Length: 436
Image (cartoon, rainbow, N blue to C red):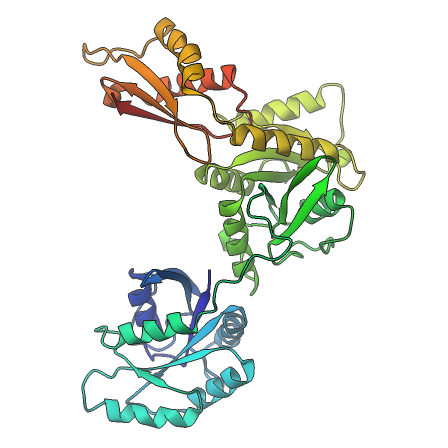
């Protein structure tokens, strides 16, 4: 998705326009200059084109604001990452030193720039806008972010400037399964990708956060063919303080959204921490298949029952969705690397499996008859028919007379029976109760 960065000096209305574009009041708006310090991220849709918008802090130099340098660095990063820069100025104030400084920086960047002159609330004020042609950034667009006038033409221009959707790279194969390696920083994701590929495709260092981007590579070995995606480590939001890490985490989340199978790597020495659980829940919310890899197992002090006890603790932690393959590996020692690959391939096969309606009814209806749904206020639920829905993930519709009376515990029973009779290891299952 294309990215548009809104930049300008303080108090020209960047956050007001940002809120209007994304349709919510995500950014604080106040008459005081310098309210916005961090980048705000949102999505805008105009005439069928969707793009991301980033609101930045006001560009200043030689001010008394202690956050001045940090804000300037964030603005520079936003410009570098963006596809189009929306440069905002103010009609009444005219061209200031800050405006001229930003304009010079934008000309040097070579990025497409849309120049918006804000606070043109009346016909007389439009004459104040013409002076901004002297910045040398092409056409000007007079708007009022507060009341919305002129923003339609501005959005038309932004959409026109957005880059055409790039064709998939020669090695990119949308028809193949996408397997993403995700986890906290420094758990060995890039090392696993390199080990599977058999080459130093991704940089590996002991420093957490070495990988910045989501790197997709075509894989065709040992009878397996898929796209392997190495992602940046995802840490707690409170700890994201480095300039590029904001975008790295966003790309990792997008990689999960696009993937079919996620290999969640955890560090054997630290175990399943809160952030690992957050990533696991993100995988579940996106309905993706999952393989759990416990890396650095060679460093763990072991006795006879260590592996069984460790695995039991893990499964208890991720309950109720504990039907996930768990692989104990050491990427450095090349231990059980092929097991990870085979588990991911098997899970994808389960994830994409289609079960015939006849087979579903043949197996599940006797189970339901042996253990029917509990009566609710004297009313009996009768399930008559089951079918699999045409979704990417395993989803099943159970047709019955009173779907509103089937509660979560019974749905869990149905899910367990589906897992018992059909191999759906590592896949989240969605059950819908529908009126017959």
